[in-house]
Length: 160
View 1 (tube, rainbow, N blue to C red):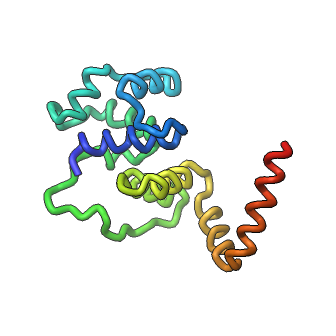
View 2 (view 1 turned 180 degrees about the horizontal axis):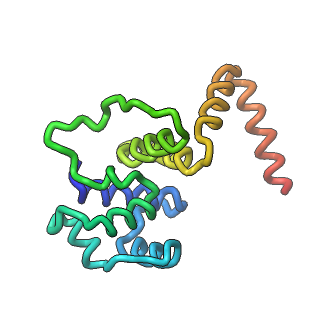
């Protein structure tokens, strides 16, 4: 996948994560960077990157985009020819390794925005392993029990 394609995908995922139901515009990315990170890049520079007119990022721009989209900076390069983004990655032993893997995988799942959102949400958690172990426990419960629990939680949330 080319850098330009990755950036368009990240805008789509970020728009979904923010509840917009659409990709963030480039102007929104520039504005939100300024508001949330205190730094930004020009709209025209981002446009050149997404159009493929520029194929390389400066280290500063790569770091800024990685922090904004919450992905590993290494993700923000074009993949080599023949690269299979669906290959199995080896996870390290730290929460940072797991968060980086989750963020990178979430950012590549443009065909499945719900799964991408879930992986990116896990990547933002301080201890994603804890949530994955919790999910493993939930999978041991019968679906009927989970549906009852979900209904009870919805009632509690509606009550305030």
